[in-house]
Image (cartoon, rainbow, N blue to C red; front, side):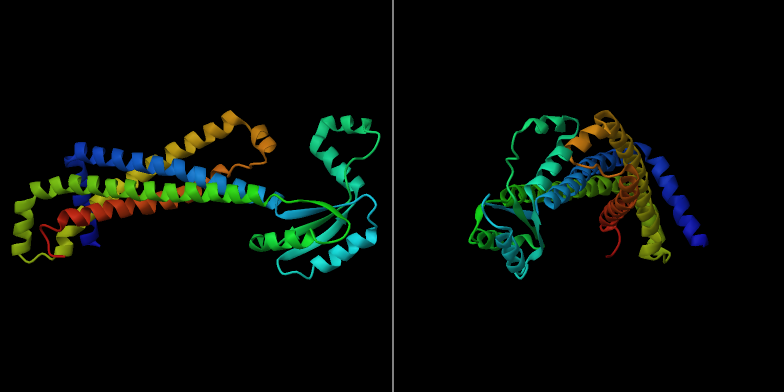
Length: 296
């Protein structure tokens, strides 16, 4: 326990003695984590929106001819349910379709009452369990008798998923770059402290101090810098995110059908992610800076 408090005390003293360089490291890591938070917020919310949109378009609507008997639709339902990748299939009348339209139109639904005739067709709705098999299912639906047209939004879903994947890959590349830069900055900062204490380190080695005993304070110093940076980053990110949500308002996300990720969920996960990154960056920077003086 005494060794632990010694290591912690020396680490704090080193941070205070080299406060200017420590502040530079804290600023660099904080900036990196803030940029990281921007990409994480974008990726999390885009993934959330993509899942919501995909949930709305993971079905095929098979529009029936007006003169097609209901038996033809029932045959399609019974046959299509046997296909691999189909979750469910059911019949939707034109009246049911019109009722759904009125719900979507909300206060403007009264405009639909002026129609002399319901222009919507009867349809068979096929829910897809596996999107990779959707093309084959759609082709099969087109072969049935009594089918007038097929409505399927696979292209829209595919484009959305590609855009999401591109954003994720871009974010990962930038995150790795920022982490490397932060490690270099912390390493150079602690290296100055090591140079200032070079004689003291050599004396400690001569009297039999182990490498880990010498390395400990520098390792903790880097971790302290990382913890401070992570704490500042989480606070700023949470504040900015709450302001953005308040400025846009819940109605905007309701109209776009894009529920934002709750602030509590975001902060909780950011605390653990940023602490892990901050401590890891600080520790790696310290280890790198000590390699010249201590055996690996």
